[in-house]
Image 1: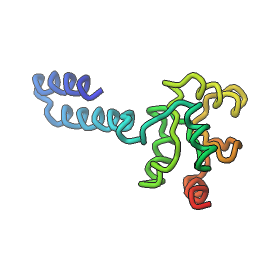
Image 2: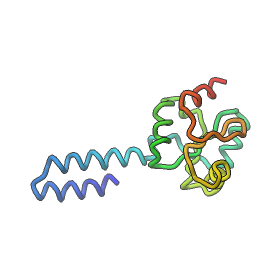
Image 3: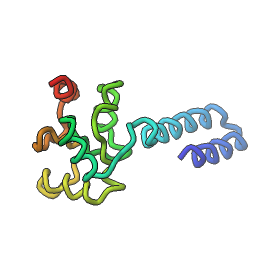
Image 4: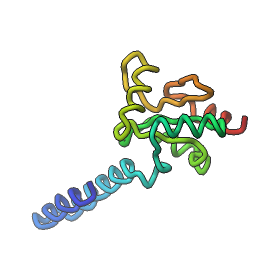
Length: 133
């Protein structure tokens, strides 16, 4: 995304619109950051996440890159986000199937599983509270 934005910005600069090019580059940079796996903790497969959750009792978060609600959850959790088990449903078909099963066939994310019970788009404060239990 960042390279695509840079190419478009270069074209706008060549046409004499450096201000628009800068704004476009910032937007593409933001989009690249939102979709970056660097912003989210490392994803694991659904099976691995369930196994880890059974061992340590921490919630499992099913998410998808580009999801504004997932980003909101991640940002509001801050450093605590690393304590959860994150499953990218675009990369893990078993995770996508689990989300569909929990949401009447829809791939609504974030879906947070706590003690085997799914919660669709829960309040970040509630999720933080689950970490201290």
